[in-house]
Length: 116
Image (cartoon, rainbow, N blue to C red):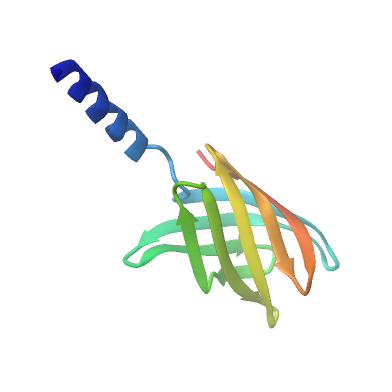
């Protein structure tokens, strides 16, 4: 019985230490009408969940909102860029984020790798 409890405690500890989205990510958004964008996506824990900002081709752009679903491993959010609301969604797979940036019915590929 003690062994089972130890195994369960270890499994919980390991899963709670699994990397989430927090950190610096090298990203690219491709195929937009204005060309491709690249830079660093910075994600941090905040008192209300998560906060994120993109530092890249267009300067520093903070997200209006940013969330992470631990069960589905999905990050979502939105931000304003040049007066346009951009919706972000990406799936976390260890040290990779893959998804889309969407606006006005158009989706653009988003990819990021965690900086080490």
